[in-house]
Image (cartoon, rainbow, N blue to C red; front, side, top):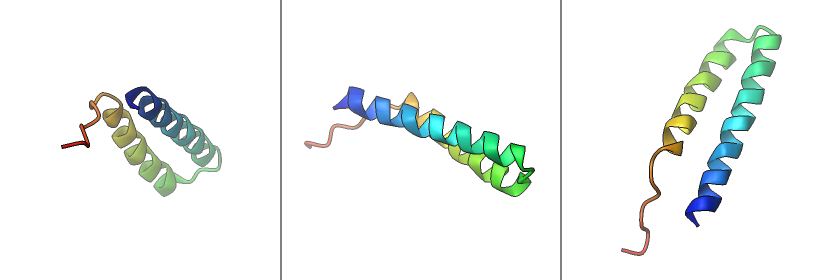
Length: 55
């Protein structure tokens, strides 16, 4: 399960990176800022081990 979760987190990061590039392309500063915040959070979660949900 952990590996699948890591893959999905990687997908989130890639989507956000694409969204940030689009926001930059059309000069959406506020939107770009919010995407950067979400991207920072998603990247930080990549290094957090998943919690054991059984207990």
